Amino acid sequence: MLFGDNSDAAKQAVNSIIPRDLSNFNWTFIALLAVVFYIYWTEVRNKNWKAIVAGFSLYGVHWLYEIANAVIAKIFGYPLWAVSNESTSFVLLIGVSWELSMMFSIAGIIAYKMLPEDHSTRYFARGNFKGIPSKFTTMLSMSLLYAVFEIFLAATPAFIWVYPWWGAIPVFITTYVPFFIAAIYVPDKSPKFQKIFLTSIWGAVVLCLAILIPCGVI
Image 1 (cartoon, rainbow, N blue to C red):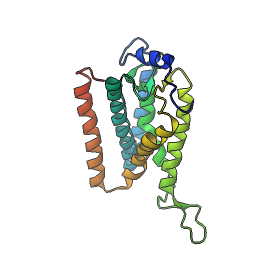
Image 2 (spheres, rainbow, N blue to C red):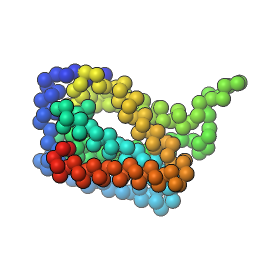
Image 3 (cartoon, rainbow, N blue to C red):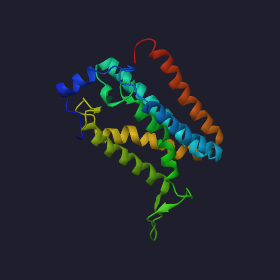
Image 4 (tube, helix red, strand yellow):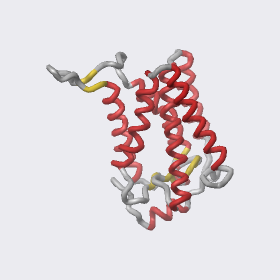
């Protein structure tokens, strides 16, 4: 399934979603949270600050996208993507379940650790060709991997695309590429840039959630 099919079944599935409903809550919620805490605390103990920056950078961008997706659903009737209540222990916003959110919370760390030890490494250098930067290669390959996996998810009842113009290619270009740009490039920027980026991203996330959830927008 490469794009949404605009079907009545997809629309009905989206209409049945109730964000933050507790009917399907189960203890995997706590288990996944514990795993994420362990991963981050291990990085803190190892003083691997760049990996932590990578994790929070991608996760912050992810949350801005999820908020925007929920606002789109409020304005236009349907989100770009959605998750079913039956597939998760808890729906945070219409497009993100607890399980997906926990995955994205560590996706930046995973991507950053896939870089070679020397971040200036270039692949496929031959003769006068200087090769492709490892950062670009990692960013592109991770974006492609996630976009391809989302094709599989969209073919299941757990994940829903409605709009016929939204699918694998737009997801790859407009969503996952920015996600992994944040994870791969921000950690090697100056400490000042990192602080400004993370403060801005997470400040916007907290502000939007604090206003839009109580107002019933998302």
